[in-house]
Length: 398
Image 1: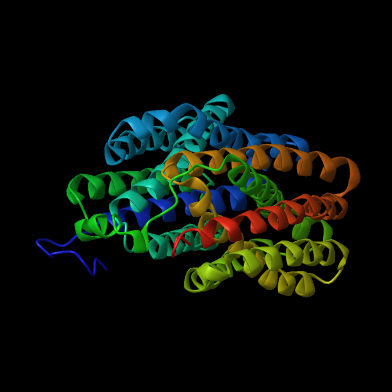
Image 2 (image 1 turned 120 degrees about the vertical axis):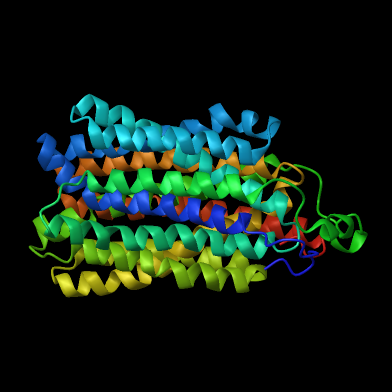
């Protein structure tokens, strides 16, 4: 994968970073698929389930604020090692301790570490691979979707065997150990060194000025999108089970995530069209969501999850592509800002969806998620105009 590297030894850091993102996606999809079982275990209302989900998302929001500067000031791979240790302890604690309070604390630290691992791994990949980083980031976001796709199927399988939802956290603990060993073995040192010299050439020079307004507009888009994604994903099983009287919920969740994989690969290959793809996806998502909320046939709703997942998958890589001309040299900081926005969206919209589901009904709760996309569309139009101006001033920045 390192086309310009002098292959002194096989470089597999990118594979370990991919694994970390895959595990993050597995944790997200697994928790979403397990929320109903966890709620039954702790006798939670729909509002309480929303708050349980929001606990992790609140930590996701805090992580870039608390750990962003720390990561920039230290070697990113060393930061990743420490975070993996904390992640292991949190996952193992949930598995071993049966108290509800221990679960909440453990999930908080899982949210903190998975969020930090996400944005630090993206920054580490971009720093380590200046030539192939953009393409690798596209595939990296696919790894998250792949993990979230596999997790509900795994959860369905072991719950069907009569095992407890705690198996999820045992799997996460093992994944943390494997990732830690991989980071240790990958070593330090420069990768794609030739590209660093090429970047000094004016033909590949990136914009160096940080543009706050552009990043803030992208934050609005990601805040609303991740809020929708979590609100929908955490409660889609409940929609199928309690409203549509169907057992297709976990399969629908897997299909939703599965379609993000080809979608993100598609965006990777057509990165120069990121602005148009983003706007198209932002219009399609609320239209499809309204249809999901209105339909009575579980098979139709299941089928709608296919295009909904494809449209949803395009958002994150498009935003990352559009971020580059706005970020200048502050890629890690910009990624941290966007990650914080995703945490805010996740906390607010997940809790709001749980509240609305209990008081207005699940159909209305999901329909309300679609309404917020008017703000995303407006932000995308403004950001797109700025992106065109900035990217035209940088040859190949996108």
